[in-house]
Image (cartoon, rainbow, N blue to C red; front, side, top):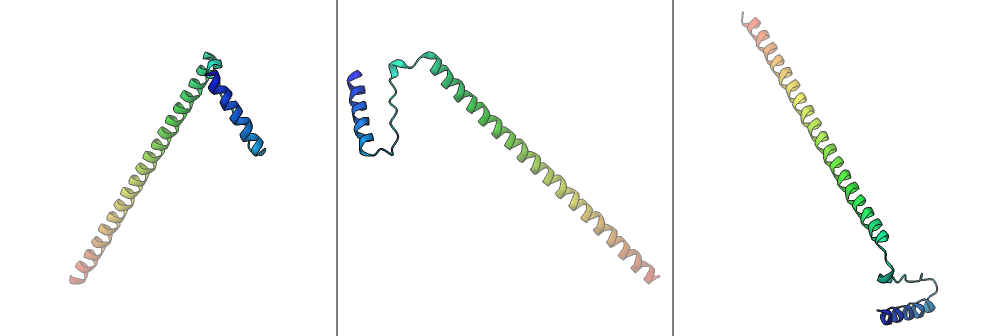
Length: 101
């Protein structure tokens, strides 16, 4: 591993010398990663997953609420239209009935 690490560092230096605008490549020596770093990484990823699920759940709840509101409004509008139509037709029938008499 040390041999590969040395080659990688050498290649990294050569790469950076060719173009100084490119930031240095960070080479992670897996032998130096401690359990605290791993635990922090896992905790962060878990938090990200929990936040993502919470966001998606909230989005789903909002969508369902909006769709429910749309359905209620549509039913209310259709009911109002139906009531108005019946009232109008009843009025027309009454007028025609009065004219016949």
